[in-house]
Length: 228
Length: 109
Image 1 (cartoon, rainbow over the protein chains, first blue to last red):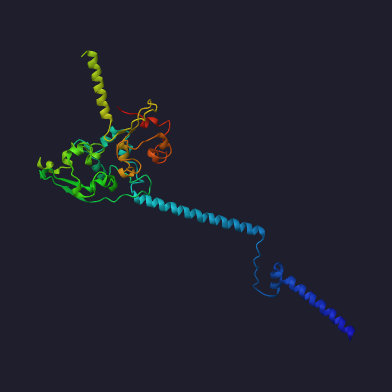
Image 2 (tube, chains in turn red, green):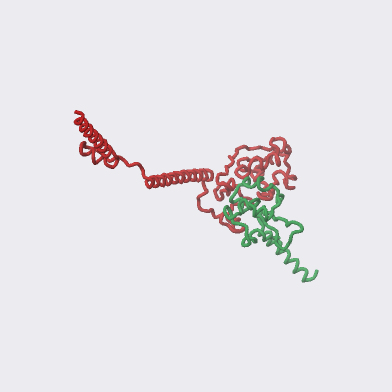
């Protein structure tokens, strides 16, 4: 009885060990498909855990994807800046104007319109012969043009009435260029005289230097032109 | 007056007339600093060429005071990207170099 039991014990241990070995062998990742597919249909290969080499490749791929994303982001940002610059100065990408190609004043003077034998820069601007930019930076903001006429009528003779047009000046000049240094920002605070203008003050700060001179009477005193 | 004197006067008048033809409204002729070598002619700033491209407020008064030559302009400042060098840096406009001296330093009397 004892002997038989011993044999049985030995056999059952051997069976147990071989079953455990079989299970281990059958369940190992490598043998899983081979073993299980004997018993079942539709057994698929389980993905192997990434070896060091695979991991390196994956890391490389992640890195290149990151770089691509960063590049795309940068390109988008640059496109945005370019679009902003284009909307700020619509003529930015147009071909150069003939006046911009002028090398000497003689060449430029021929291309500029003139009124009363003086270059008419305002007309050149209105006709699109020039498109002065608001600043050096592409994103420099353009100052909005202000439409405010200031009527000045001399008490002595209404024929010499002058209508100062902010509309003609603000495409060139910002408020701070004239106010309050040259003109107080109050209509009645500036007594404008031709003597002061001819002495290079008031309108004479620019007119007679970079703008038409006081010799062009009718460009301000329109009443004189109508009376002729 | 001698004939020679008349000829000289005529020449002077002709030179003045030619000069007035060349000069444009608003040209600013800079004066050279005292004590510096005077052999290089003073620089002339052509307003006309700049106003074709930029509004007055692009430069005034931030870069230059609105009074002719009121803001001291030196080559050191220009080279450092200030004054004219804000644009004349080889990117926005032609750069200041020994190839471009006479584009400014060609004073017309």
